[in-house]
Length: 151
Image 1: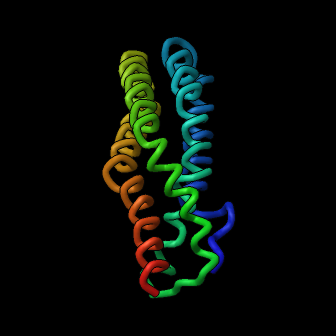
Image 2: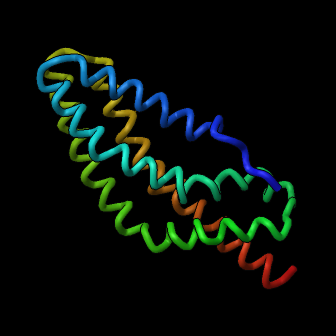
C-alpha cells in the first residue's frame, strides 16, 4: 500500500498558506511584522505535521476500503511520535494562534481584509487539527496495532 506523493491535499494547503503569509509579509506596517512572527512560529510546526502527523492520515482511504498489508506498520512510528509530541504540538498551537490574533488585529486596523481572513482561516485550521486531524492520525495507529494483533 503506497501513500500519495507530495501533491496530497494537506501539503498543497500548507503551500498555499505559505504563499499567502509570504504575501502578507510584504503588506507593510504591523500586518507585515505580525505576518513574519506567524511564519516563524508556523512553518517549523507545519514541517513536523508533514513529517509525522499527516502521513497516517493518507492511509485513511485505503483503510476505509479494508486494504491492509504488513508494510502499513511503518506508520506506527509516526503515530507513536505524534502521541509523544502532541502536548508540544498543542502548545505550539497556542503560540501560533496568539500570533494569528495579532495578525488579525493588525490587518483589520490597517484595512487588509485579505490578511484578516487569512488569520481567521488559520485559527480555524489549528482548531480543526486539534479536534479532528491529530486524533484521527493517532487512531490510524491504534487501528493498525489492533489489526496486527488480530489479523
